[in-house]
Image 1 (cartoon, helix red, strand yellow):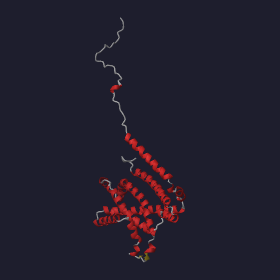
Image 2 (image 1 turned 60 degrees about the vertical axis):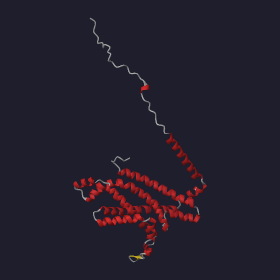
Image 3 (image 1 turned 180 degrees about the vertical axis):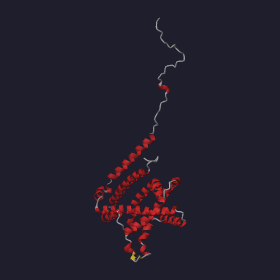
Image 4 (image 1 turned 90 degrees about the vertical axis):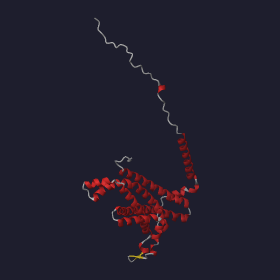
Length: 289
C-alpha cells in the first residue's frame, strides 16, 4: 500500500499574496526652508562685507594696534584691571552674602538695614559713587587722626566704591539662590539631626549654587568691563593706560582697539570658565549638558 502523504487542501480562507505596491505608501517630502536659507546667506554676506571693511580700512591702523598690543604700559594697565576685578568680586560677594543672610533673618531691624543698603547702592550710579568717595576729604578731612588724602588713594577709592556697589547686586543674587532651594530639603536635613552650619554647607549651598553661578558669572564679566570707569579718577587701568598713550601720539582709534581686543579676550576666557562651573554645579539635573 503506498505511503500516505499529508497534503493540505486548498483553502479559500488563505491570505492572498502580498504585492509590493509603492503607490499605497505615502511619500514623505522634506519641508523646503527657502526663507531660512536665504536669510542665512544674506547674513553671511553682510558679515563678510563688514569684516572686509574693517580689515581693509586703513583708518583702523592695524599695524599700530599690533605694535602697542603687548607693550609694557598696556600690560600694566591690564594687570591692574584684572587685580581690581578679582578683589572687587571677592569682597563684593563676601559682603553681599552677609547682606543676604541679614535679609533672610527673622530680625526686622537687620532686614531693614540690608534692604536699605541694597536700595541705596542700586539707586545711585556707580560714577556718582566713585566721585563721592574721591571727594570724601571734603566731609571727613581726617579718619583716625590720618589725613583722608593720604589714607584713601585712587586705587583704594576704586576698590571701596566698586566693592560697595557690587555687594548690593551680589546680595540679591545670593538671596535668590538660597530662596531657590526647596523648604522640604532643609526640613529633611533637620529631621536627620544636621546642625545649621552643616545644613547650609551640605544641603543649601550646593543647590543654591545652581542659581547663583549664572548671574554671578555675568556680574564678573560686567565688573571686568565696569572697572574702566575708574579711569575717571586717574586709576591707571587698561583704559587709562591706552588713554595716556593716545594723548601723546594722537592715535585714538588704534589704541581704543587695543583696549577692546584685550577686554574681548579676557571676557571670552571668563565665559568659557563660567560654562564649566555651571556644568559642575548642574550635575545630576535634567538641564546639565
